[in-house]
Each structure stands twice: as structure tokens, then as C-alpha cells.
Image (cartoon, rainbow, N blue to C red; front, side, top):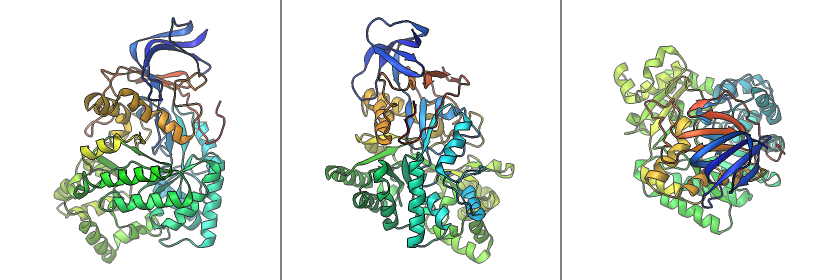
Length: 526
């Protein structure tokens, strides 16, 4: 007898092979049987009513490092069918942590507020195990975090000694379970590194079977050059490359630049380079509002940035550079979150609207909010076009990543709907409505493909012996209900979500289960 039998389902196994009708038996959290005949007996038997049963969705790109401890139920993940997520992306991970109090504060100021009672990646993952989350969680090690631990927010080339310190921290993090090295080359302190530094660090990945994941140095006018840099690092180091949330954010490059970047990736793959990418299915990006500040202003960390914003002469320079780089763009940037009640009225408004209400220029309004909220301001930025989204998504090596956070349905602010609706949106809009690819391909991009990139041998497919991370959904009804105006809601059409064999969501409601595991690269998680 099985603990659970899910019968009368269309099994989409995660390999991109055609679906077939069958049943699945679960025992001790593992898929014990995948059958096609008369189903056997289970202590709990679920009639799938001819709906689709797929592996749990794997979010290869998230930022739940700091939010999962305060929201272990991870409703934003579970209620859209995500059963496994990887954090630590865009160069910013919660470990390793320098013992230097100043550097520790710089990390907290920039990555997010936690107690940072650990110093190593292993210590952080031990801490996360105590959280008992509803979702499986693993992490990358951030290049920015490693650089900060070695040399702070210094806007210069690393010395040989500092580079050796970074290499040591990277090797230790990989040995303790990090899946990859991530970089965020538009964010300090990672933006201060050159390609040689990144190449030398990427060479350290090879013995561990890890990969390099990069938020490119530019995603707008110079995105092609940024992709060339990433590919050169991949080729010189020998490390596999994952281009994070690939997109083109400058209108002048729409429908042009992505054709070149994809051609470059195709050429690299033909040369034998291991190049893949991920993407979220929305026209707007999301990040912190301080990303609109010139990078030089961050040298020394958040406190130094705030000091410069308060200095009239330096502020004047920052204003001029911010305005020059945002011609025609301020109206596309909306505030999604503020830390204090004082500026709560700004959430959901564009920088142009806020500037008009305050009677100042848009750059002035932006800098005022950053200073008043001490950099705890989120933004949503409308910068992409649908044609580019579809062209990138159709590529056989593009997988899906939300770039979102673990959050509750009652979280603060108005976050990007990708937190809550990324994966159902791909199925509903791009598979069912736009018919970019069959359902089996859509599921593969969310399960088997990211599992392969992460080196999972026990997740991502419906196979006997695999963990029973499963999503039962109605293909005709699945829909991403979260919107920019009302993002905090579950998706329609997701009947059941199982994490390690435990029913964790049913018909849009969380069951309260906390069956997630903390995943470590190379570890036997069974």
C-alpha cells in the first residue's frame, strides 16, 4: 500500500516527452510507482479527474534568502506550484559573512536584515534548516557578497591577496553546498570587478561541478557587449554559464539586440560552451530604487551613499547623472515598496507622479525617497517588449525563473506579480494562448531543464525513486491571477501541490505543511 495514490491523471513527466494517462504512488515522500494500468491501493487515493500531473516547478532564480525565514510558509512560491527554489542570485547571497562588524553591517544594509549569526555558507544553510520551510531551498554564493567579505565596497581592482581570499571563500561555500557562483554586475560591490577577476573565480567552479550565473553588466543599450563579456568569461574559465533573467530593457534595442544575443549564445553552444539562460514572463523588471543612482556613489556602502545624497554638491552631481541616464524613463518606474508608513502613499505611483505631487523634478523625487527610506525602496520598471520575451522564451535552452521572493498573501507593499504568478503565466499565456510551444515543453522549462542545470538526480521528473514534488493542475483553467495592481493572490487552476510527498496546497489554499528540505549541492538528500 502507498501513502498516497494520485490516479486518473495526464502525466507530464518533465522530460518534454508526450504526456500519457496513468497514476502515481507515493511512499515515504518518494515516487514509488508510476503506472499506466489499474491503480493500486493508497491510504489516501486522489482522483485527478483527467487533470495534468507534473513535477513541482523549480524556480532557478529567486531572492528568498532573507524573506524565507520570516515567511516559511512561502505562499507566493507554493500557491503557484513552485516546490523548489534557488536563492543567492544576482551576486547577493546571505553568506559568507565577514567577522568585521563594518562589513557585516554593509552586508545587512544591502542584502537584507537578518541576524547574520553565521559566518559560512554551511552555517547559513544550518540556520535555514531550523526554519522548516514549506518549499525546498538551495542557494548560490554571491560574488558581491564574497567581494564584500574580502574588501568591502571598494571601487577598484582586487589585489592578489584579496583575490585569494575571495577564492578561498568561494571554495568553502561550494564545498558546503552552494550550487553556483552568481554575479550582479549592475550592483555594487560586484560591479567594481573586471572580467579577469570573474574569470579567475569561475575557474574555481570546475572541480565542484558548479556553474556561473550572471546578471549581465548591462541589459539595455550595451546588452550585446555584456553577453560577449559573459561568454568570454565562460570560455576562458571553462565554467558553465547561466545568463540570468535575459531581457532587453532599452526601447531602442527592442526586437534587435535579443536576436544578436541569442545568435551569440547559439554560436557559443556550437563551439562546445555550456550556455543556458532563464527568464521571467513579464514586460516589467523589479529591483531596488537605488539602482537608478550612479554606481560610483555606492563606494563605501549604503551609509556612504546616504551621506553623499545629503551633501549638496555631491547630490547635484548624482542628480545630473541620474537625469541624463533616464531621459523618457521616469514615467516607467513605479514604487512597489517603502519601509516606513510616512511614504506609504507613494506605493503604486510612478516617479513622475510622485515628482508632480511633491513639486520637484523626477530625479529629485527619486533621491528623496531613497534618502528618506534609507535605501529600503522597491521599484517596478516597465522596460521590455512582448516580441523579445517570446523570442527568448522559445529558445530550447531557456528555462523559467521568477526573480521573486517567498512572501505571504498579506505581505507589505505591492510587489511584482512575478513573485506569485510566474509559472502559471508561462502555461496560460505563452503555451495555451500564444502557442509558443507544447505543454510538455513548457513543463520541461520549469522542471527537467533547471534540474539538469542544478545537477539534481532526485528532483525535477516524475520517475520512480524521485522525490514526490508534484503539481496537479487543470490546463484549461490555470491562470496567473496576480496583476501589477493586485499581485498578492493565488493562481487559478492549481488543484494540488505536494512537497516531498506532503500535500502543501489544495485549490489555492496552503495546508500549513512544512515539508521542504534545505538542499546542498553534491549532498545526498534522501
